[in-house]
Length: 256
Length: 252
Image (tube, rainbow over all chains, first blue to last red; front, side, top):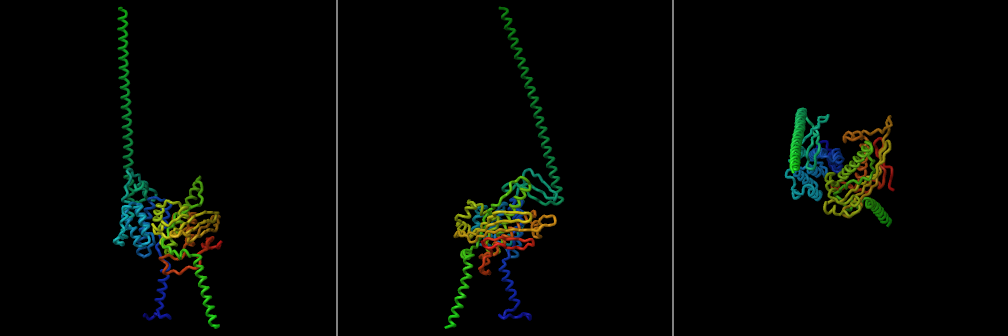
């Protein structure tokens, strides 16, 4: 016992009592790391792929800090899993849903229903994540990986706004969306050059097609002209032949 | 003999006091204590409030503000329940569960929902109905109904009708002066101040209605039993200009 450890009536040191009281209060207050409210609200009101992506990235950060502080909010893993599944990262999503069951066993039936809806092929995969810590190290990159899994549309029209953000048209598993991407100066220059080259190429292609159309029109006109002349000639020939025949007929009649 | 009478009297008094205590608990939270739900699913919000016919940009912004506040009402309902020790699925997972549901909100509210218990392991469903929004130059009001239904027995374990109002003082330009918390909310969520007022109002209302329920399974070990109701069944919550909350109406 320390020199200053005054004993209470029950014989316990005062410091220990204070610590015990603090632990009880902490347990009662039930601290949980909050869900990313702003991003959730943005996704719930907009329902765009961009807001889903931002939400997933924010959820991954919240999970990481919550796991470190041991204050995991129920449903956090499941929500992140659903977000990943909606972005096409089904295996990672399955791992997150399994982690939810491991952390909160009461969610088992619900998670099975969600899997059945979003990833029926992975329904049987109910193993716990083999190494949750390693998985969580990957969590941060998973949301960003999903971006690279997306396919740009055949014609990309980059729109760069005043805040140097590129709005890129991408093909998601469901539809095409515009995603905001923050650019560096070099990237911006390269993209603008690329866009200019593409624009020039497109203009050239349009001009070529106009010229080809013009040529085809002229050719068709000439063809029509020659056809008309040919037809006229034949008509003339036929008329002459008819006239000749008529003359011949008249001469024979006179002889008779 | 007199001593025996005294003892018997004291014993009767103690018993009477104990029975009063349990009666209170039984009348207010009987179902919650008996069924001890562990998992609460929040059903999609039933929004019955009126929207404007869009003729101008202002109408569109007004409708957008109401939509955002309605979403905020739905999203912030989970937190107080989680803090009380219940398992509440998050909004994305709940949306997936709701997508598999073929019944309408009204049917879900009134019909048998025992399949939620047997198939999804959900013990109770919280129905939130946003009834009406009202607004004056410097005040915003909302009427919300909360109903917690057991999936096992179908009983309503909790029913609260709340009317919340937020009033702000006027500044020298005769426009409402927002609280610092409203400004912080507006900056954080990137919305206008009017939307921030509505969102903060429903958030405070949710916290007030759901924070003092009897503890769920996760917090039950450390929680004390609740003998008094957390709030009346019908009440008006007022947020004053200084940010304090005032309950001005008791049970009907």
